[in-house]
Length: 318
Image (cartoon, rainbow, N blue to C red; front, side):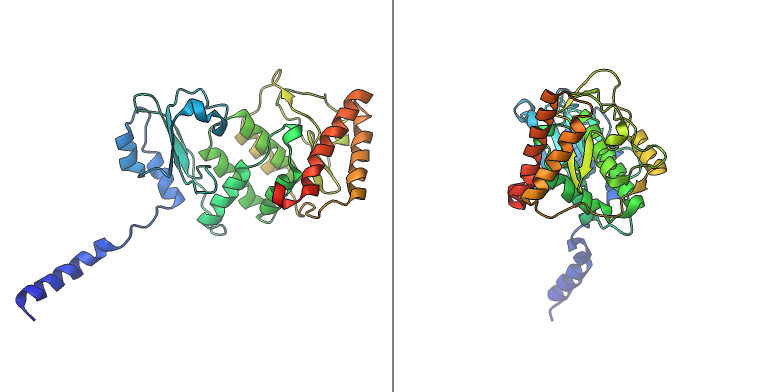
């Protein structure tokens, strides 16, 4: 072996460790990096701290449908998403918003304690966060029980501690919005048993339901969502934003954590028969007749009919 060859081999051995791929930062480590990003920072500094974004959203005005209503008009002209994948654009690690000058104006995912669980690996956690973000909001015509059932059944088995922890992480990395408030409130009502001493859950402060409140909330203790034959239906077409404003989502989460029992059973995953379909509609008609006039009761039944059609069409059409 020539002296040159020996020197080359020694140098290659000494250099080899630097050729190993850099391990991806854990969620806790990445949250620590996010905390170093400050308002006013440039894109170059953000990239130096966090690395290349998984997705960059530009042309904000043309992509308003992709944004929560709380950030649609925040002044951002570019948003960097971290923790996305090709199938779903939800940033499971957080997001950074820039103004027209390329400076940071908002950071989401930088505050609070990032979730760490020995029972849920990072890949599964990201999928759970994406599921949470796909939860329908309180709009009756768009309410798809099939999606809701999938989300509830995916979370039930976690148990309360891990389930609540996933909610906390979802809120930690997400911009505040009415939509998220609706999603979180509705889902928490489905994931917990109704408190026996109250007979119903506290009112959701979303404004005024389009069809009014039941005279006795114990008729539909999870209102505006109601479970009939283990099928979750939404009993309102929407809300008019007036009166009480939504409570802080973390306060709502704390209330459920302290006062409600986690659901133990999954919701019905069987495709509806015609008999079940008609039976649920009759039950809805009976409930509506106790606090609505005949016209609005009929409209309610028609809306529930549309929701149940998602179940009859099956998984492939969800």
